[in-house]
Length: 158
Image 1 (cartoon, rainbow, N blue to C red):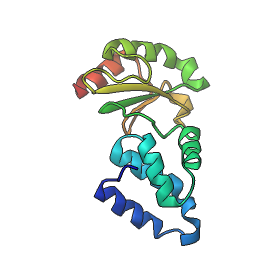
Image 2: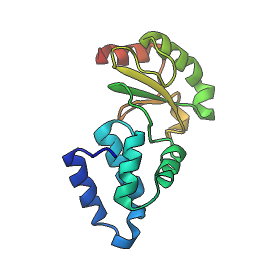
Image 3: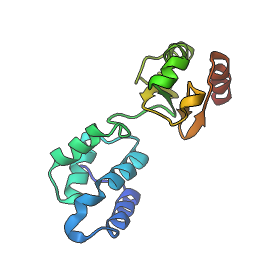
Image 4: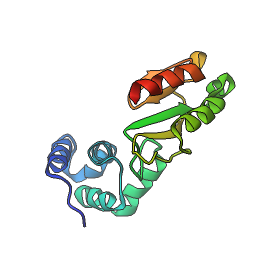
């Protein structure tokens, strides 16, 4: 079984102090967020590590990781572009915007560019239904994104 980096081990140990010792599994979402933030994704090895840490079966961790769309099973690029695909943004042009972005960065959906810079993914509602199409780049939110605005955003990142 893989060992976690010391700083992750310390962070998870600190998280576990907020939960009753007999209910470690209650910390699963917080622990998975910490793992993903530190490691870039939740790998099979880290699923095993989390299960051991929370004293549960690896299948329970795997179920959680694959159920919630915010967890990734493989690393993403330095800039993770997440485009809203729900109805309001779709009607405002999110699918066309996505096609343009894929051309601009030279990759497909959920693939990372060869230089490791960009990954494009769909995401569910970003809660700005009146100002679509919307997207995030890492933790930065953008609305009313046109092809021109997307070109400018990418130019600022290169």
